[in-house]
Image (tube, rainbow over all chains, first blue to last red):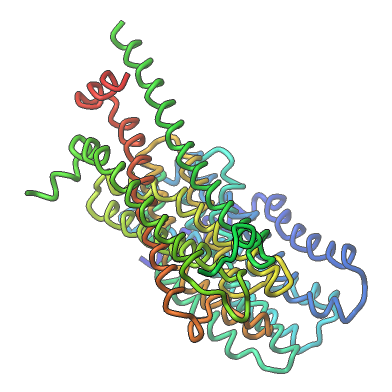
Length: 222
Length: 57
Length: 244
């Protein structure tokens, strides 16, 4: 079972490594979107520090959605998805592996870039640490929930825009707790409550999302 | 009786725009939805009839 | 009498056809009674003057918007569990009406907010959750519209609906939490303690009217959906010929 899981993850990482251009697009999108906000709003440091956590988090959501469209689409097109679904393991395991791979490929780079973007917005060191921590807990939720959307919209025309409509409302709690944790640090009220709620959301997502993704995959492929 | 006259009723104590804006929008939405449902039913029926005629030929 | 008999489209179709006018009639009667209470029985509010009469639309619309989403999830769950085609049709037929009530709750909330708070829109926890609920309805309908195969559309929509209904309480809690931290508007549209008995009655009667209307419209919409899907069967062919 564990070998199947690691095989799914390793396969996706290898495929992503071969197509580095696609992979870099989402990361540059993240950097560019956040850099546009100071240009649109103005360079006052106090204002930037207030909006910084929210902007970085919203950009992370959008960057995540950008790469979700391809989560199952490539495997669906070349037929390997059907083979994977026929494997003698639970389809939820496949969905979990796909989500973990998506997080390793797209989520971890966001964690590494985020502190640099935080500095652009004048966030102090402790807020930067909380920003990275909140993204570390929150981005796996984005990958897991996004997997449901990717499975539901598999092979549909306009799937990329559709997935945004389906999934963004579900991301609201993650955005609120994630950005709120950094806000709490800035305001001096602490981030523990936000981070533990975010952790609870992560636990729920890990328990529920792979099953629903698996059901959605079966609906879309049959 | 709350209202002294019909004018007072329509004026809604100065809140006419808000109160009638709410009730009016509701009326428009409900009438519009009922109309849309009927129109869709007619369209579907005529399409299915055409399909049937096409089949029987 | 066997209730399961009505789960078959062939028996449900004529039954729904007979029920629609009755529910429409009930909706009209309750609306008349509700409007009478709203405008002629309920006294003027000493704080908000006549402007508060918007709650007779706003609160029932907000109730219905949430209630319909839960009823849809109920039909979706039944459909997924027992593979009954009719349940999916009911969920699908309810969605546009639910979206309409969500829109009305937002619209009347804005019209109420302008004179009371001085702003058309306030990021109040209830209004914000209602807005996200509208997004959930829109997502459901967009997914249904994008899938041509009805079998897949039914199941995919039902799954999304269930994920949404799990999320609604989490979203509401998170928005409320966010709202209290940011010290937003603490005034709420439904001030339970000072609400007079007649106001509560007015809202209840209007909510029942909205409920009857929803049943009538959903049944009418379900009939069309059923006819479209069953067009190859014997009974549907007879119905199509008859209604010419």
